Length: 123
Image 1 (tube, helix red, strand yellow):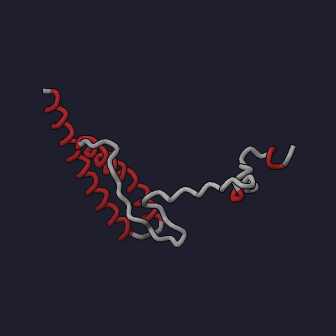
Image 2 (cartoon, one colour):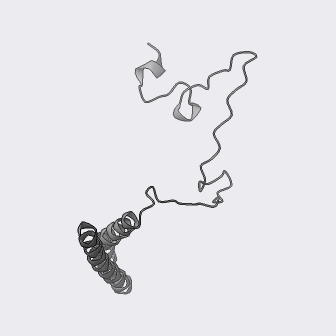
Image 3 (cartoon, helix red, strand yellow):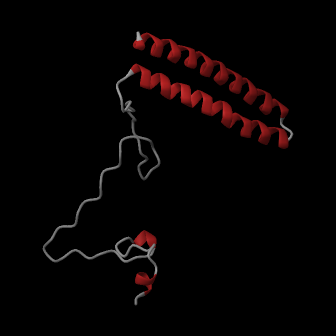
């Protein structure tokens, strides 16, 4: 058994993972590497223009997404606030609390909007 066969994590065709690059058959052109995805970084590190589109063209989907992100951010701020306090940075902790409160308010407003919209659709 070869060393590569003994390690299922090594992909023989991927030199970056310790494997060997496969040789193209004579007369058969090599496949071109895939173009980078829109918004990905090129080799120089610059960012291409990104055009994000909602998977669902639905205003309620957008509302739900922003609501979820706002409430997730409220929860995540707890970690950042604790980190700042542990490091003795009261100024940063206070700033993070303000961000947390703004996200909490946005979450509450979003929940109210969602409730009103769902009640209106059921009528």
